[in-house]
Image 1 (cartoon, rainbow, N blue to C red):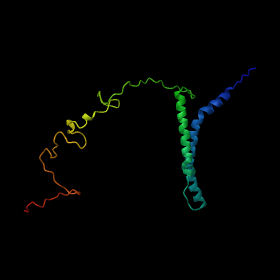
Image 2: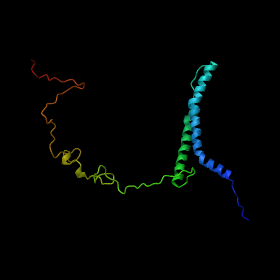
Image 3: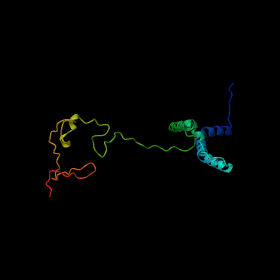
Image 4: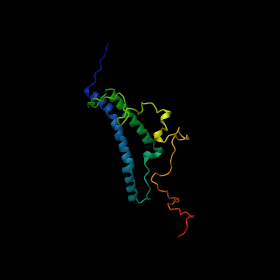
Length: 179
């Protein structure tokens, strides 16, 4: 004896509606709760205190009680729900009836090094130790090494630098004759 259970169209719609709308309803509920607790209730609280003539105190949001655990929990629920729906869409479930966009995306086979160069980038090997501190960079054998070419610290245009104090005032040498 096999029994065949049949569901009416209304039962299918109810089940489909609840399964497809619980995620948006969670978002709507969170939005309404935050709007009421952060906007409407403070205004009503101030009006109530004004009309009754009691001393005015600040509204203390109910959802921030307990270190804001309500917001943390709702963030987790909505985040996990959004992640779950994304996974459902990627696996082919589409309860809303909208068509998913076709993916004609082709990933590049090898990443380019950038700006048209053929070397460098993340997939190329690190430079060898001999390339660091080469002649074009001033020479030497690394940090603390002796440079292969002498470094001339004087300026090439022939101007003698003027010594200044920390505040920017010019230091006048004392060994110059007074005029």
